[in-house]
Image (cartoon, rainbow, N blue to C red):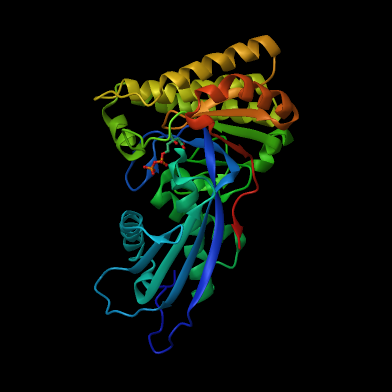
Length: 359
Ligand code: DP6
């Protein structure tokens, strides 16, 4: 592989690259990791559309002598943000040994989300994938090393993974699998692969309405939660369960079997939260309102037969998943019965999307 070092006798013209990248919602959850951001089990997600991050990466020749650190300015919604800058700097510094040009430039990141920062929606998947895509565009502009679209996406997925595991799945349209599994050819622990063309068309028109139960910062971060899996007595059977489920879920998604899909997806969400409850120390991220919504979803399904299913991330907010053809009924159900459980009545309407866009 080329060394990706700039020729100092030939200064780079200042420029910029811009990407918009979406969040994703895991159906089979990544929970537990080892080594350098490698997953303990394969995961599968739907790529979302409306919850996204726009990131601009500006570059120019470095202004200060190389002190072993990347030179970085960081703006979040136009304002300097020291805590985001520090996290991004740590990430860029960790990439510099294999991407030494990062230290030869002055970099400015300008980023912002399509959803309110305080909405309680995690932005690490959209944020890290947008930044990873910008870094790949920059590498390609400077060295022409990522002309091939598949090579570009794969490297973007690797870099996103190093920033935040779940972010590596946001690179691809419709749906992606991260983690080596016998059920997906070419799958890997190092990067996600697209599986959107292997699932029924109905999943290309699928909705995810995110019921914001609480906007508060989580009491236990995902990073800490992953770490607690190392001492969890149910860790090994959990990983085995996820590996086996990948086959069943993909089969159900290929055939458009919503009943099997829903059963696995809901069980994955509850298993994730059960793992938190039996970690040491144990913790709960669901709130009473999360449970109230879950029970109403069960009842609604029993009453109407409509295929509406819930899932949860590592937090209290409930994602409602359903096919586009029943959107009118479901939105009425949300307005009449679920909005009352949401903080300030906030619902982030999202749907399956076509993946990141270069702007
Ligand atoms: C519950 O990707 O946020 O959302 O790799 O430490 O950044 P880090 O963790 P993160 O974990 C997400 C966990 C999850 C399930 C999932 O998205 O698969």
